[in-house]
Amino acid sequence: MPAAVAAAVAVPADLAALAAAIRDAAARRAALAVRGSGSWWTDVPPDVEVVTTTRLDAVSDFNPADLVVTVGAGTPLDRLAATLSARGAWLPFDPPGPVSRTVGGALASGSGGPLAAHFGPARDHVLGLTMVAGDGTVTRLGGRVVKNVAGFDLAKLVVGGGGAFGVIAQAHLRLRARPRADRSAVWTGTRAWAAEAAASALAAGATPAALEVAGPALARALGWADGDRWALAARAVGTGAAAIEEIETIARAAGRPAAHEAEGDAPWTPWREAVGRWPAVLRLGASPRDWPAAVALAEDHLDRLLGASVTVPRGTVRVGADAGSARAIQRLRLEAARRGWPLTVERADAATLAATGVWGALAPTVERLARALHATFDPAGILAAPLLA
Image (cartoon, rainbow, N blue to C red; front, side, top):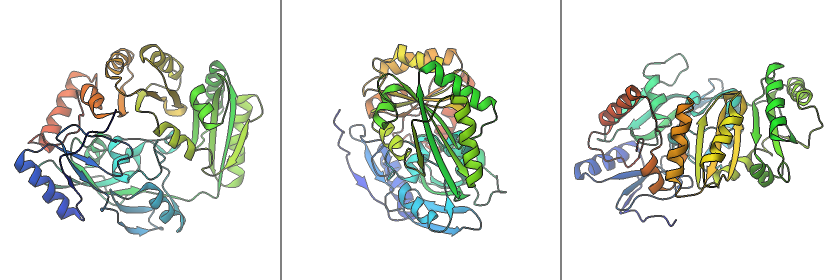
């Protein structure tokens, strides 16, 4: 589907200019969409103006000893990673999509990647945010230091809100020391084998940085497996001995030799790129035990499943669908809700998002709260971010 043309584009250079642009849009009742690099949400609805955060790209207040960094929303993730690595720090945050995605866009989508297995999803890396609400008000949520938790729950709400509550301008992020060792291994087999091997690894006490199951289509795209084989991929970080022991624990659960072994990000950057090519990316919140059933449910309801990837320790099931799959997504969301599995539309074209919403099938009390908070932060309703259909 071709991208719709935005009515106008604002490129503010600082927080004050961003707030002014949003106040102007609110005064005119002009619908406004927010974009970073434009590599994740690639189109906008017709007649919607765009504000881009690409010039809000400063990396500031970074002291490696504190393991906290303040970063502008328009900062590309790969540039941030290089800056941190040069000083011995690491942000274990690997959302799908190109590594040039911006910090603000990745936080707004709530995306996480395989590293969420151990380090948590996007919101767990955020200590605080500076956000501009839909009326142009600059709002500071949370704080910069780990012990400061004032307003932190609201920051968690904004992360994953798709830009519906305001425009993220700056984030205070929690860091880790760069690990001395970073090892990965991949084993292949049937779906049933992958489920059993992953469960056995967790039962044996494995706590890897990542433990990801890839369905056949994704495994083939990554060169991890061929045919209809599934892949179980593990990543272990820390000291050399600890990383080796972690991989050996999972290898015993797998019960077969590894098909691939690698150091560092080598197996994982292609994962981000491959999942980032799916036109629609859906995230189901199942459980470590129920993920095979969640994948099967997606296979049953989507017209065409482009791929599946499971962050096993969290039970997070990410699947790919074609653009324009709103009706199929709605059916899947309702069936998943009956099983207690929320479905988030991480990515889709503007028309599909408008029909499905980012969130959906919420409990009535939760939906009322979400709509009330949305109205509070965006009283004029100008932010063209379809949180709820």
